[in-house]
Image: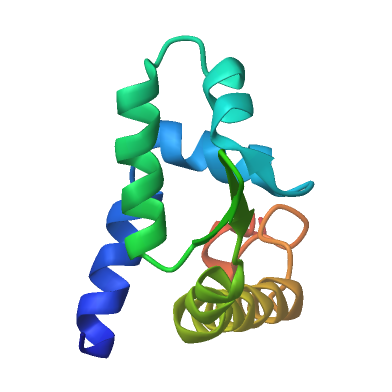
Length: 124
């Protein structure tokens, strides 16, 4: 799978709110599939399994089998890769632009305090 295909799978996985909820549930530690089903009562077990498969294919989930139980572990490294590749650089650029805007605004005189010469009252 190419890097671009991996990013496509990752963004697809993050694009659904139920999958994001699952990741939030796994943030504090691994959970069984049954526990995830209990935490997401709006979804049946089959739907939960389908979402888990998408997360696993995207590399966001590591599955461990313990007897009859399936334990789902969050792998946050792909999310870190997104942060390094896109979010960080774009955020740095946005902060740089805002800092420049702030400097520009602070360097200009206050237009209310000092009206332009064309608005000065005429001398009699």
